[in-house]
Image (cartoon, rainbow, N blue to C red; front, side, top):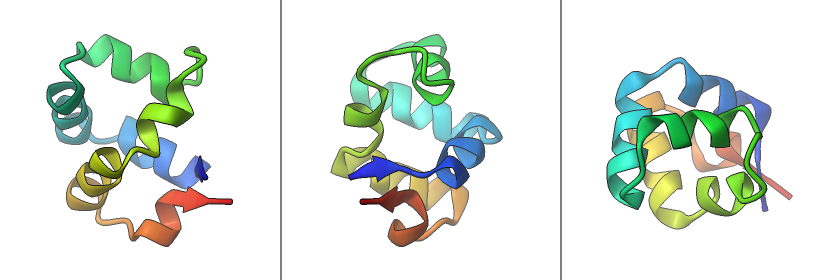
Length: 70
């Protein structure tokens, strides 16, 4: 699975979502910003994790199908 561009944009526009993702993975929001801008090799691994998907759905209002793609 891969994270969609729609989800990346929604995460980048939501400080609450970035803060919660940082808290969930014990990472600074700067790390989350690197994931969202695809500057990290592992961005897709973290952002498609079930915990991330739950956080993204809660704080952006996107559905799972809007967040993940094959």
